[in-house]
Amino acid sequence: MINTNAVKSKPGLSIVKCLRTSLIVVLILSLAGCISSTKVYQTDKTITYKGTLYNMSNVQKIDSKIMGKLPNGDDKNMKGMDKKAVQSLLKEESPIMVTTALKMDDQELVYERRSVKKYSEFSKMVKNFESAGNKVSKFMAHKKQTQLKL
Image (cartoon, rainbow, N blue to C red; front, side):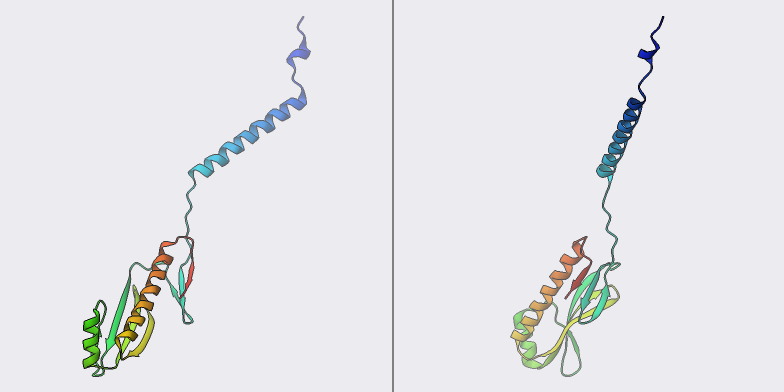
């Protein structure tokens, strides 16, 4: 005669096995999700400057512009000019209305516009503009940062 009590399992034991198996499956799935997941940041990047909001999300190209308007009305590209060239220009044509701006595809952010009579004024203006350009570069490279106030 066969002992049937030895073959039958206890009812509480099957529930524990089922819970244990479910827990293992959930852990495996969650670990697989952690290992294979990649973080994608899709947030709008904006720059705020003097009360104006510039959307940077779809900007492909950022360029800088330093232009001088001479007293006779002519425009002069002053980007990359060395000290001697600026001093000689200021000696011939003074004062010069200098505009520093960031060009972002079809938008233009005028950073500063003022009349310059001395090279020291021009140099300080360009230094401030370059600092702002560096801030914009770092901002665009940072994936999580969404807003920059210049």
